[in-house]
Image (cartoon, rainbow, N blue to C red; front, side, top):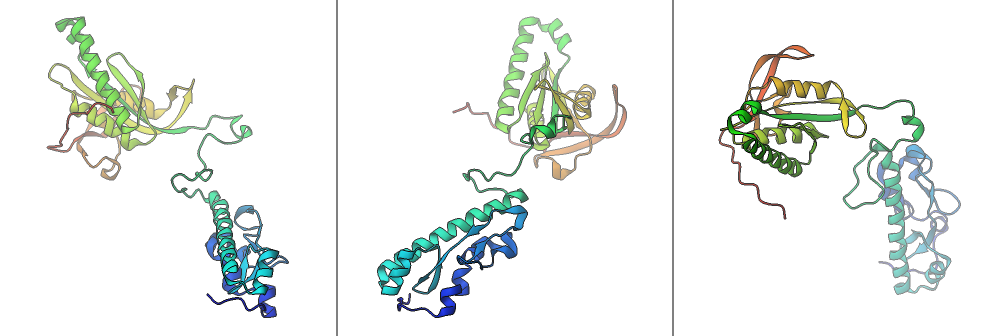
Length: 315
């Protein structure tokens, strides 16, 4: 680094070298637009009024060992004129770090409107999500939500009670519910409600929901009771905070009712949408109560020889 000489060319005093004065512009990148170029009485503005009205940040410039430096003070200006290299170098580094911090905050401000993902641990920069709209926007209507649903159901439960008795039936339900709870928690979906000898599972995404239902059916010991399921996803309306109305809910429930023991039925999922260890075993035509006849209903199942290790206890 070249030491200060106590004098600076007039054009550098007024504007600074382009690489120094535009320090904040380089850190801000293209997100700040043309407003990031220097100018102005105090040495330049970063951001201007571009990118959706981002706040204007004024960055002063001061003479330093290599020209002008953003973020300086009168004290650093005097040091530069006296030619004290060590102190000037420290102030220059501090000023440069300050300018970088300002530019970084500006970039986050202007990029937040584009819903870019924030780095892990960054506070206040998460992308906009549903549910935080102003009260006026939700006062007149309920906006549908995108949810995935899976229904799983024990087959022949009434006959099982008649043959084995109530105590055996309670044990069978307890084992079934324990498996559903365990896999739902591990895959990030929720058991919305228990339906006697069945369960309703809800997920925000369809992949984990299919994975949960497929693994529950694959792991369940069907030697005494069979287990079947149906899955669908789409827009629904939430009511009373814990119930849903919509075609996706009805379709998943009706597919479950139409499934044979050991089957998981679905409609229209490509191989890319399925977990890699779940495949389409075939298709068939079914009649669904309240919906009608549907062709090409998919039978989903696990890939051959899939390893299903014992589930370890939590902790």
